[in-house]
Length: 213
Image 1 (cartoon, helix red, strand yellow):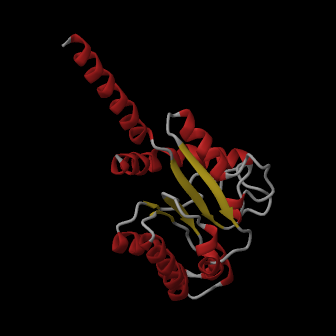
Image 2 (cartoon, rainbow, N blue to C red):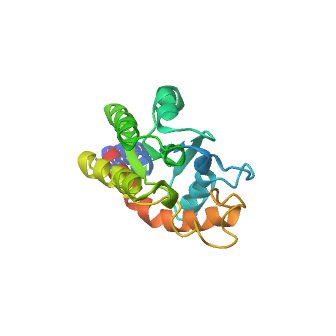
């Protein structure tokens, strides 16, 4: 009887060992965007995806975040490269595009349509979309700005997406946090962006982890 009990306990422990990794399943993300995601004029480890991954790992999250930023990319360009830029097995995508569209005065309805097609395509692959919002530059005028700035909250509400309202929040006008062009963040600026982004994305990661169990 004692021998049988030992065998049972050993088998139970064996089962628990193989059940536990699911709770600690690693999450895979992609930062998909333009030069803001590519780390324009920054070191290889100074870009937003790299620093966000490091910050999240320091907080105990088993996560990897690949960078898929292309300088100068628009929503049209992003749509064209979406399928081959996001590998199978990706759990979430931080979708950051539209800034270059606004700088070029691309019609807001085109920007909206392109972003929505990307959102629909990613969701069809069971990939969670985290939408990073952009704001139109003031020199584009109020009519353009109002139409453009509605795109991100509208799409987030329609598709049930977590929305970070403005990707450059906290750095856009701060001395020392932007490069001389006034468009791209410095390494210190990326630090501020990551610090603000971490509390926003942590609930997304926890939800994904819970859903995988």
